[in-house]
Amino acid sequence: MQVSVTFRHMDATDALKSFAADKVSRIEKYMHSPSDAHVVLSVERGHLHRAEINLTANGVRIRGQETSEDMYGSIDGATQKIERQLKKWKNKLASHKPREGHLMKVSHGVIEAHEAGTEVASEAAAVVVQHQVVDARPMSLDEAMMQMELLHEEFHVFINAQTNTMNVLYRRADGGFGLIEPPARH
View 1 (cartoon, rainbow, N blue to C red):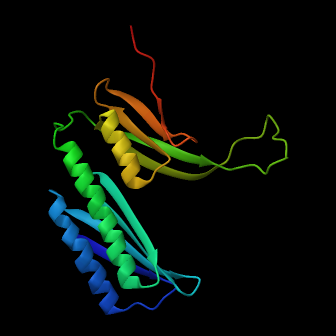
View 2 (view 1 turned 180 degrees about the vertical axis):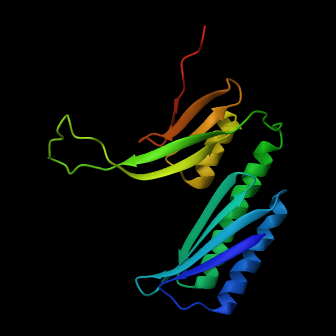
View 3 (view 1 turned 120 degrees about the vertical axis):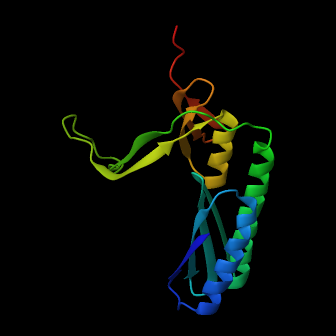
């Protein structure tokens, strides 16, 4: 497993770096394929130690974070959260067979927000302030919901394995999920 450690607002130490790499590499036993992990260690407000771990394996991204008074405790907490997520995910997917199909590249843009109370002229063009390309992978609705939970995302774009169409799953304000899908073809 490839592990990179970044320090923010604190001095980098070999002891913390090796502790984080050791803890994260133990997670590898839950995965079948090689993975990459990026660990960000930071200090907030002078006394809160935050550990954020972003893990990528076989197209699945998992994120765990923890904040505590002790950096070692934060690293432990973040890795435990990822382990719980992986165990839950692995158990749930054990009954599913692998999905066939091709992934699709999807463009995701963030449009500049206008200040509240100002009118937007109808001829003013929208300004894209952030752009990224994401992979829409074939998966079931349950798998997409689980992926959203693992990544703490507000929305998830995927190829519905049953219909072979692009779908968007999003988190509703009431905590539930919404699904956007094309109408059925007749």
